[in-house]
Structure formats: C-alpha cells, structure tokens
Length: 217
Image 1 (spheres, helix red, strand yellow):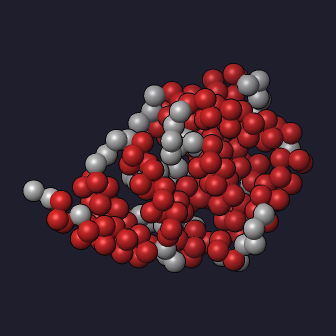
Image 2 (cartoon, helix red, strand yellow):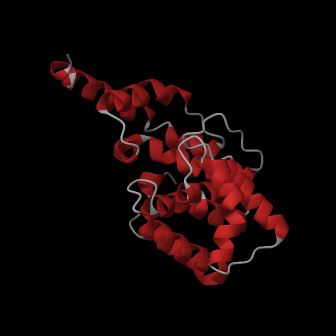
C-alpha cells in the first residue's frame, strides 16, 4: 500500500500500537515531542519527527526491519539540531549526543541497541546527502526522512526548512530544482513511494522560478 492509499488515522493507530507495547518507545516519543516543542525550530520539529516515524512504519514493515531500532531512531533523527547542529552536521551531532539526550529523560537502551540507533541517526542523510547508511534499519530511517522531500510534502517541508535556515527564494528554487536529481532512496519500498512525487517538486519550483522572473534585477 502506498502512502496516499492509507486511510486517515491508520498510521497513527499503528504508531499508538507500537508505543502501547513498548513503554520505552512511548517515553522516547514523549521526550522528543517535549524537547522539540521547547526548541522553537519551525521545520525540524516534532511534527516532522512524527511524520518520519509514520513513514518509517510503512517502509520498515514492508522491508522487514527491526522496528525496535527504526522507530526510536526515526523519532530522534534530528536531535542534533537541539545541540547546535547544522544542516551538514546535525546527524553526527545527534549521534554523539544521543546518550546525553536519553539520560536527560532517564531512558536506557542496551549498548548494542544504542550504537545501532546512533548509527541510524548519523547516516540518515537529510541535508547530508553523502552519508551511506549500512544496516537495513539505517536505510529505512534514511528513506523515511527523505520521503518528506518528495511530492506535496516536498514542497511544503522544503519551503519551511529553507525558511528555518533563512535562505532566500533564489536559493530555495535552485536547490529544489537541481537538487532533486541527487536524492536517491535506499530501499525498494522507499524508491517506489518517492518516485511518485519527484517530478511534482521539480515542476512546482520551476513554475515558481518563472513567476519570480519579473522581480529579479
């Protein structure tokens, strides 16, 4: 089933089932929501993390990934921004700060799981497109985040993200038209979903580029 075929509430219900079965995951969700809501970030926020987690359910279940790793990693993939990380560094910062973040909320994972979650955060790509996720779980987290760059949400989240970074309209248009061809998904499921929306983003920002022409000097 593709994302646009999911009825309203189904993915939220699936997420709720995961958190009901796993009190630690529920605590990760609560803590991540609290931290991002306090941060003032406008694009890399709780809504984005939550959507990524739902995307991760779609991809992870289809690919047979370990959801005990995928879901906490998806929820916390952008915590690097809470510690001063930038578009290019937040994956590494988030992975390094993961133990500190979890300790702040008294959440404990076995060392093996902690290292795996950290690896997913470190290589989730986002703005860091040269990263290479190695495990299936890391690939799922990467693709769950990348889905926000395609289709209607690609336009919506793209503008919000560039606004958060205070980029001007010329920068947005350039990155969202030329940059789309560089976005490669890691899983079969991710690729199938993303390709439906790649051209939509390119077409929108090409139209925006044309509309902006009279205002250029």
